[in-house]
Amino acid sequence: MNKVILIGRLTRDPDIRWSQGQDQTCIARYTLAVD
Image 1 (cartoon, one colour):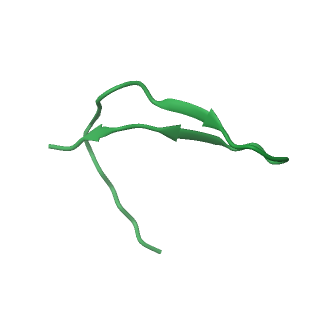
Image 2 (cartoon, rainbow, N blue to C red):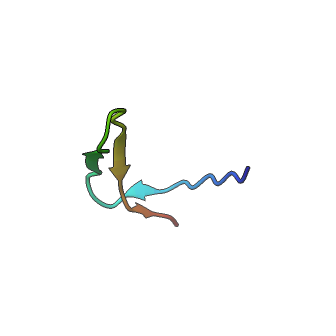
C-alpha cells in the first residue's frame, strides 16, 4: 500500500457529497496548497 503525507492549507471550503446506494458514504473533495 502506498502512503502519502501532504502538509499545507486548504484553499477553499471542502465540497461534501454522499454516495448513492444502500451504504451511503460521505465524500469530501478539497484543494490543498502545498509549499
